[in-house]
Image 1: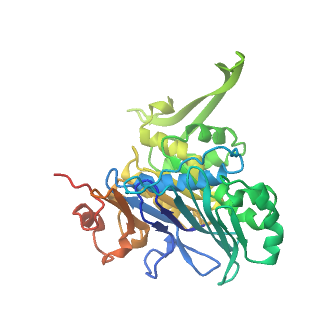
Image 2 (image 1 turned 60 degrees about the vertical axis):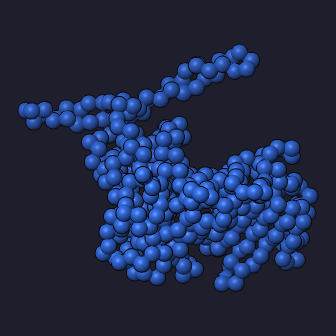
Image 3 (image 1 turned 120 degrees about the vertical axis):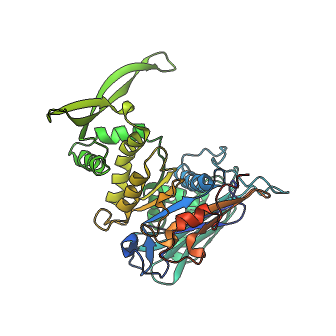
Length: 404
């Protein structure tokens, strides 16, 4: 479970921005909270608003950058550059180092892991573990200098520093060489948090649908489609092998072709039900997005993953969007503590009947400096019965377009 994510000097975020998933002490919507073994209450969902080009997507890109730098570390060649690094550009002297930090709970332990890097090298990296209320520092890295904070961790980890390189994260290298103390945080970053574009999940989702041998995904998706009032009763997926690609050696490469049909029950004027199958490509964009995100949603709910989507409301009806948020906030549908983090334009989800004040975030950009700022509704004096959507659109919380 994600406790917080921090980013500094990345794209439009010059100074540190923190997405904090810790709940405030307010009592509204207790169903929206995860009770942890640490006594800390975490939010099941967070929505992020802001004007176009304010920096909402840059926060999601920061998550992507941090996660992918971790996941690609061990496969990086010694002379390869570190991908995804885009420092804040509008400053006198360029600082080439972007910084990222995750605080999360995994295997009943709390971890803080962070690193700072340029395109060329890692210049700082650290790991702290909480097995009690007191922190246990595991390692601190400054360029190629490593500090270990106990004789045992030094004995295990120090020899592995020789296997690391300036452009690789030590967390990934140590785990690759079977260090147990780094395994859990590395696996959490590798498996338990993912970022999706609502329009770019098609191939991965089709593979998950095809692998659904016991029908659990089919049952989940059809229930989701029905409860979303999309008039889809069922679906079928047909696959066939086609030779439509050619390798560098000139040989044909077999690939799969998918055909997705949605099943509709249509009632005639005489009251007779008739079944019609339509290609999924003929459905609305919002229906397609929901269908192809459905396997990822189920994986998140089943495993307690952190599920992040940029512009989830793309081509999606506001009522459907609110339904998905309620799905993650539900005690019944989300018993494993999955978390939903989304950027939105649709303001219908900006309601204190749906979310706590701490679950609503804003990103605003100073057009004079080009700097983005992240803050939550909880920073404002807001009454529980207030129409925050109306207040937002009037400009009270910032993060709206300044149209002349």
